[in-house]
Image (spheres, helix red, strand yellow):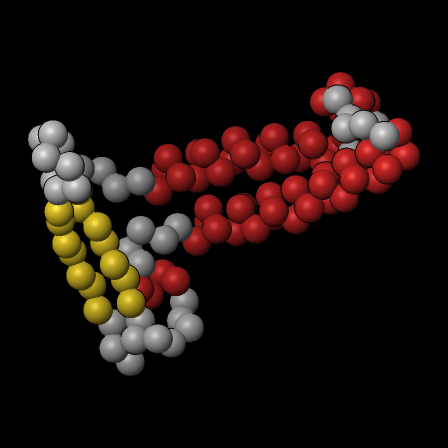
Length: 110
């Protein structure tokens, strides 16, 4: 397995006073664990985000059904009052907060 890490910098516009830095991560074309090739990968945040994506898809499906039935998009108040989607919205808000905290806790201290 070949792992490479390349750091490059460049100035795109002359008026920029500091160079832009780019990090390119590669595992040699193999599908591996993201944390093996990316030192910035946060597995806890990835797990929370996966759960959020599942909830978002349920919300989107519900919105499409509502629009087909009523001919318009639902308001946030209607969504919160609905017994099916209201708890999913509350869970999504809690997951967003958890994601913020997880990312904040996983940041590198310089």
